[in-house]
Amino acid sequence: MKIKQQTIARFLEFMVGFYFIAGAIPKAWDIDKFSVQMAAYKILEAPHFLLTASFFTVFLEFSLGAALLLALRCKGWLYALVQAMILAFSGMILYSWIFHGLKDCGCFPVIAMSPPVSLFKNLIIFASILFSWKTLSPVSLFSFAASKKSAVKFVLSCFAGIAGLVIAWQQGDFTALTRSNDSAAGIYAQFQIFSNDGYFDLSDGTYLVPVMSATCPECKSKVPELNALWEANDLPPMIALVYEDSPGDLDEFLALVSPLFPTYSLGDRALLYFTLIDDDPFKFVIVRNGRELASWNGEVPEHAEIERFLEDNG
Image (tube, rainbow, N blue to C red):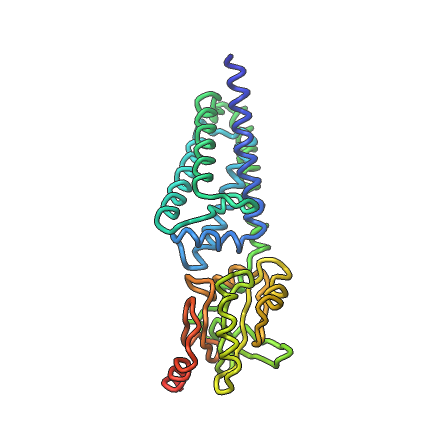
């Protein structure tokens, strides 16, 4: 009976480790989107902090997952660390679900997972690790043979965590963080755009810049108002920066809503898009010499309002 329980406990331990690594791989592969997903929790807001937290999560899941696969138990300390992580993540999910309407926990990026489903999943993981903790004998670090074996497992687990960080580092869009509106050049100075409608150098001069997502219904609904501003000949030039979640999203956007104004694709640079907007997926910005001079979140200002602002800030 005891052997059977140990077999079940080892199987559960292995499967939890496998789940951690399987969930960490897509996070590391698209660390920017994972960082934006973490922003939905409304706990961290600054992109630098979000990216740091994302890297830490990737390292933790890779290293703990590998440790569970290798049965590195460290006299039960590994189980305690896993349980603490599960409780911390569950607390954040519960908080963001109740107070900020979180819809997808981002726990397993390739599959949308609602907070109730995620909390139930975490309960299963918690119970599985607790059963393994109570059933399996912890590895003794005080005998020479065991400590040598454990040291190898520890190094391999750390190596797995570092490998996850390397993958995430290679995929990270760090240029999105190199400039801000407070920097010398300004966050929009990075955009020098050649298009069929002309050359737009946002580092020099005044521009109207809608920032939006190609798949956002709210953003699509703003196009008629933006078209009206574009047709007015007494305003600064306009060019929209459009985020694409997948290749071809912008083409579908153009075919569906027929914007008259020029557009520029941000590609799938999720972190850059998140850095440019605020709480709403649509943002209308007046840019001067690369800097954000004024902005409207979730709305398009009236023609007269833009005129008055430009007159007052000549």
